Structure formats: structure tokens, C-alpha cells
Length: 243
Image 1 (cartoon, helix red, strand yellow):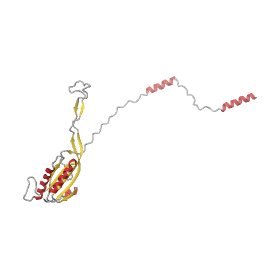
Image 2 (cartoon, helix red, strand yellow):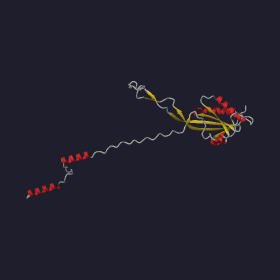
Image 3 (cartoon, rainbow, N blue to C red):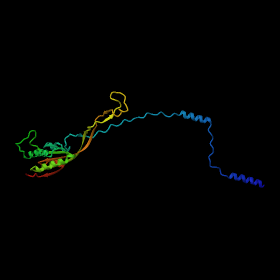
Image 4 (cartoon, helix red, strand yellow):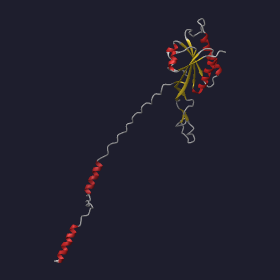
């Protein structure tokens, strides 16, 4: 009896041992299954590669409106018919190399003639019924010289003078003086290219035009008030010193 009880307790203990957590071993696939899967993979061919569609590039944006560098220096808002119908505008440009004495003489000749003219005095090509305005213009590098010319002319003028000052910017087209070059693929005579001559053969590229922003100054001088210029710009009234 004791031996039977020991056997029963041993069987009961073995039955109470928890099962292991390891997954059951999977069965090895048969050779026929492997061959069928391989044939299935071979039958499923990859889809054909479609050619890449190249989207055409958009055209470059149009360059901003610009003028040539030798275009007259006149503000666009001041160059209207309201002024030209009643006044003759005489433009005098000042640069770095301009002579101050020569420019002052030109300004005084126009303003003194306008101040001293009468109905019997006429000048060829100029309507005597219109007034005269001197537009002293300069770019930023020569602005100090233009201001000096205007101040000297006002001081030497023996009558009242109205001054209107305008400052604006504009785009100027400047051609590049240096021609761009790139290495050519072959010699000019069509022969083979040596390693020594690879960097010696060049061909000219089309000239490139540059656009730059330029600051401009205009000083209007007149012996009478100009209503249109007063609406657009600041003004200053000075009395000429009599000698």
C-alpha cells in the first residue's frame, strides 16, 4: 500500500507541473510546398518601370522695368504735362568730374535771363510765355557737388529763388564690360584635345546685362513758385544777396 501511495503521489506531482511557455515546434515544410512557393514568386513578376516624366521648367521671370544708364535723370512723377505746359525745364547733370564753376554759370545764365526778361526779349526755340525751371540732377556719388552748385547759385542770384528737392531711386541696365568665357570641348581646328590644352581653349558667352538700383537727386530752381512741384516735394524760398 505504501508503494502504491508513493506512485500515485509522484504521478499527481508530475501532473501539477506547469507547462513550459516555449511555443510548439513548427513542422518543417515539405519539399513540394517549397517548390510551389518558389514557382509562385517567380510567376509574380515586378510591374514594369514607367519612364519618369520630366516636367518642363517654367520660364524665368521677366526682369523689372529699367532704363539705360544714360537716360535723363528726371523723376517720373515730375515729368508730366502739368509742368511742361507752363514751364521750360532745363536739365543740368552733375557728376564727380563736373566743374562747379561751369555748372554754376549755366544755372545763373538761365535764372537771370528768366528774372530779367521782358515781352520784347525772345530767345530762339523757347516760348516767352513759359517760365523757366532749372533741374540740377545727380546720382548719389555726386549729390554733394549738386548741392554745392545749387547753394552757390542761390547765393549769387540777386532775386528770390524757389527750390524743390526730389530724391528717388530707379533701376538702370548696365552692360558687363568683361565678356564671360567657358572652356570649349575641343580645339578650334577640330583636333583632339591634349591634357595641357584642356584649360587653354575658351569660347565667348553671350553678354550678360546687369540691373542695379541707383539713388538719384534732383534740385529744381525757379524764380517763381511752381504749384505742381510744391505738391510733390519739399520746397525752400531764399532771397538772393545783391552785390
